Length: 501
Image (tube, rainbow, N blue to C red; front, side, top):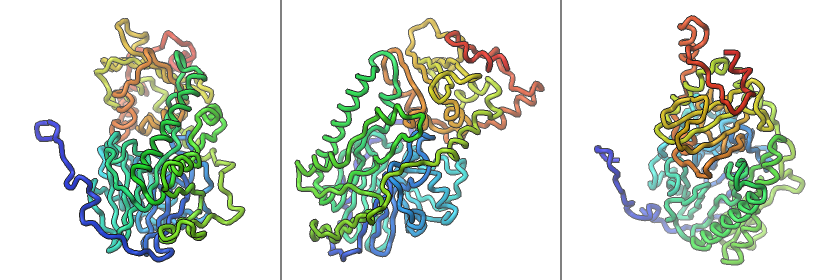
């Protein structure tokens, strides 16, 4: 934006920024560059005498309680993190920026250098509120080489579809490039380096609440199954064509190894079918001569060996025989306990939290009415829970739907997650991408402005609930003064809660 709030168009110069100060590839000794897969999107790179780690999610859930690791991380994962010279975190989603993992790391190395791109919403926007004590977060501009030592440099690029949050990275060592496009929908607007030595990208799909959390209208089980089948095939074909066009020497599918393992999400686990990395690699090999690598936890690719002779039996060292590859149990309890603490929080004794929260959120002047229903594990109304309407045209909270023409969405959310999100001012990705909602909408229209606001553009500091409660005390009643609570005429399940107030 310029000084008059006009839009400025900037052209990269050079158009391919990785071509600035080009370096010719040098011969690599065996073992000089090694890439070890840990889990999901986490890779451990040995680059000469430096170690670099991508997107460490190695314990706990992502997206509140909706995603869990599919693979069992190597037993020495924490040592590997602690030995890293630098860490790259691609974006703020919790399967990449994972606070349980980083909390464990910060207890040992709080000053470890972490690098992120200069996105519109800071990657670590919630660091202070998270309680994780990391002290060396480095925000770097896009499209500029960051020099680590005389042989190693990296460049962070933005996504062309979600430039406000998604990034990808090029790592170069002695002229050899490693391209990691992570979750970018259109990395760098579709302009990427060709013939890199190693490329890695997501592949799986299934990282959205759509369509499996939608009900009503066209959203039958048959329609959802066919949609998923079609979309997964499109994604496979897109990734295969991208690899063919860029023609890397080696390609690795990663960043898709998660599972909806909590028993309450059995339906999602069984229906949210994901792509098979082997199927993608077979498709790539059919259309090109690119070498493919389907990684397993602890497997190590020796780039020098693979570039010299792809048939070298030591080019890829698999984990020892008997190594546990897939997780068969998850420690749910500690994480669910944290979420459950929000359910009985004092904030929610007062119905005025609803107005306080949505005023803080700052979304209004938009013709949309939503009905928010707090639910149990099975998405049935939570006993004593809230059930209310929000009219975003004037940010009001009516007892009945307005008579004017208006789009309408009904959002059922598990009470522990929605209250934890509200209390801590978190983004709604925990609800939507984490499969913690069930949605209906009339008409069947995606309201981008609404969802984009609650998934990306919420304020970066949480609501001031302390002041909220203090205002109630100052009013002398022990509760904030509010008008008559809204009781939605569509439901009586919320009657107990409303009549308490």
